[in-house]
Image (cartoon, rainbow, N blue to C red; front, side, top):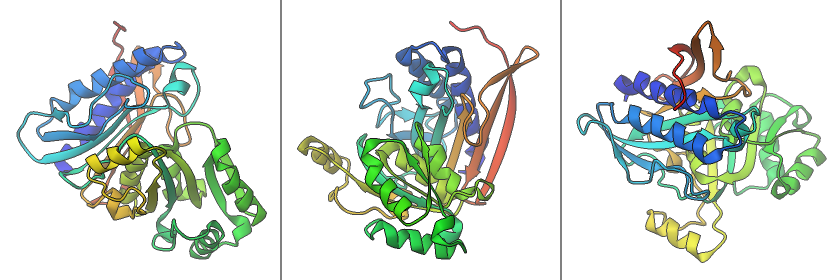
Length: 315
């Protein structure tokens, strides 16, 4: 996977640049289409036998890099790919923060083949790795994470998406004296934040999209953090979809290795608009500047990358 590292970075950079003209436009489909087409074009130039295992657009019927799509030159390593051409389509077209373009990759068979449905996710950084249990009461996880991070429970900072379905979690955390920090969109960035020590985030918790869960799990794998998860099918159709995709027991709790079963994985994300630790695409003297994170599991190393591209007129 190492030889493909910069190629995957170019994929997210190109998608972010393609999405940028649609920031504030109110046009979700057009924005998603632009980012998707840019991703597909770059992926098809890569020397690999790539296959999309987590695609985009099943729920909102946006243009897709569809599950099962083959990409690349047809030569080189066999690679499973998870993509979200725009994580945060609504913030993008509303001109708001927290929009990124993101991709993860691993050797064939090493990423969970997850349907687009709800998933409960619990994530922590390296210090608390091995100390969490998604099936345990939340209070027990708070105490375990506090101990691992050398804090009192009252000093913990927990990130949760601001949704009514999370109110019970919020109430429990605050009743224990820990701090809840709410965010509105884009949970991939916030899960990764647990592994960036300067941000002082101890835990990420919430119910969101399963595809985003696998993408975040790849990043945490690369950074030596941990994510556990549990799919939450809401109807028989979703249960059957899980079984069709190889998940025989959709109610079974998923360990980090169930989500991403290789250290030889890659994660890249580029800011479309500003977020917690990435800047959005910006103009500078006739050029477009991108700001990205590039992570690979072989080194457990996070790199911030700034790139400069010529301005291309929107078509």
